[in-house]
Length: 310
Image (cartoon, rainbow, N blue to C red; front, side, top):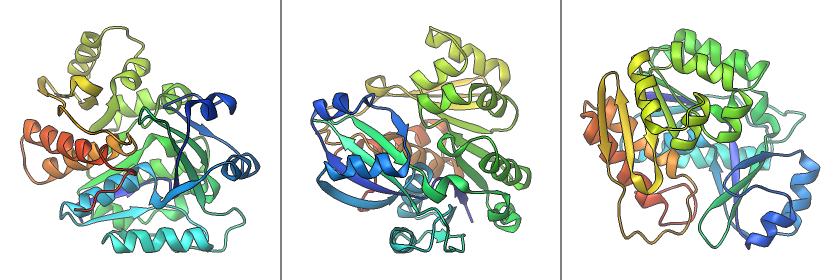
C-alpha cells in the first residue's frame, strides 16, 4: 500500500450561513471549535443541510489519493450506527480500504458542521463522538509496516488515548507525514507538535499562520531558516501567495492559480496534501509535486465540499 492515513472519522454536514450566524453563536470564522453533543444538536436545528459526506481531514486527503490512482487505506473510529454505516460505505465507494472493525460504541459516530459564509470561508463546529476515542488497540502494526507513508492529522492529536495510538503507529512506520490541521490545534499542542516536527516527522504540512505560530516567529524568512536548520521537509500553503516547500536546504515555490470561481474553501489543504503526496510517492520532483497539490486544491475550492469527482 502506498499511504495509510489515521484520522478523525467524521461525517461532514455542509451548510450555508450568513456572517451573523457565526457571530450570534460565538464562533470564530475560519477556525474549528469542539462542542459536546447537546450544543451540536442545538446548532443543527437552526440550519439547512446542503450535503452530507464521509469526511475528516486525513480521510479527505486519502480519498484524493485514491482518485489519483494510488492504493491507500484509512484507520478511523466509528460506531455501529447510521452515520457510521454511511461513513464506511462512503470510503468503500472511493476504493479506500477501511481498517477498522466498527462496534456498538456508547458514543455515536463523530460529526462536523461545515458552515460556509458568503465569502466562501468555512467555519467548523465538531462533535468528535467516538472518532476522538481512537486508541492503540485500533492500530494494526502490519498495516502500518506495509505502507510507504503514514499520514496523520493534528486534529486527532490529544492527550491520552489518541496520542498513544499515534505513537504506536509512528513506531512501526517507514515514513511519517502530518498536517498541523488548524491554528487551534497548534496553540493547544504547541510543545508536542514542535517535538514531532523536529524529531519524528519526515514531511509536515501547514499553512503560513500555523507554522509561524508553532515556532513563534513574525517573519516568513525565519520559518525558512528554522527548517533549513533542522534539515526537515515542510510544505507550506500561503493562500494567494501560492505554496512553498523547504526540503532540507532546497526551497521550491509554486504560484497560486488565478481567476478561480471560488465557492468553498473546505478541503483546500486536504486536497493539496493529496496532490503533493501523490507526486512524492510516484517519484515526481518537489516542484512537480507542489504543482499537483496546487491543481487539486484549486479544483476543490470551486465546488461545495471536500471531495472531487475525478
